[in-house]
Length: 269
Image (tube, rainbow, N blue to C red):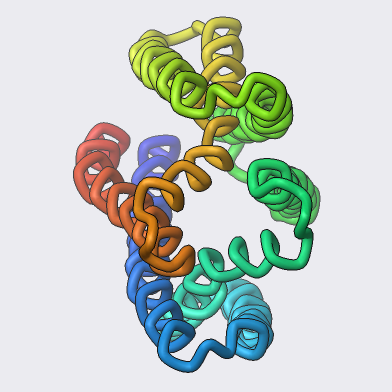
């Protein structure tokens, strides 16, 4: 009975975490459009990036502080909205300014380095959060630890893949073909990862497919942004990058909305 109650409690926490992440994604969706429109009208790219990043850091710190206080659901949602709007919304134009300040380096290389930096910081933040966080119930600790390992391996594989794919594209100039092959392989390994996830005890296969999915699926992201900018020319880079980012955020929110209720029901049984 105690184990069942702890699982129900954990599922409720997970449900609210999913709600906060979905709200964060939607706020980032709105923020990316709003910031891109303001930048397009004012052409103050550097100033907008500075202000948005500053507000993103402030509201990110606020979110982490409120997270430590039990029962502050309203403040968590408000902080996640503000953090998502500024911190997540500024990402598309940050990519553009990153490309501009690294000129004459090719867009593929500069975008890849930005993506790689994000992956490294993500791994470090996940590790730090796991070290500083409190212990879970014993029956959930192994699950949480292995999930963190899989995410870390996925991020590292995406880091390696983004560099490898960018180098191959830079030497061969076969941008379209590389994107087609990498996206195709990424979809295949993502499907295999989801199928293996449903089979208990397949830890080795989960790690293998997370590596392959990360290498191709996450590794192709930087050069996909480049071809997205090219095929939407003469639309400005800010708008095209924002639309790509918005589609990804919207898809993530949709997937969470579709899959999370089923997950909660399964864990509460």
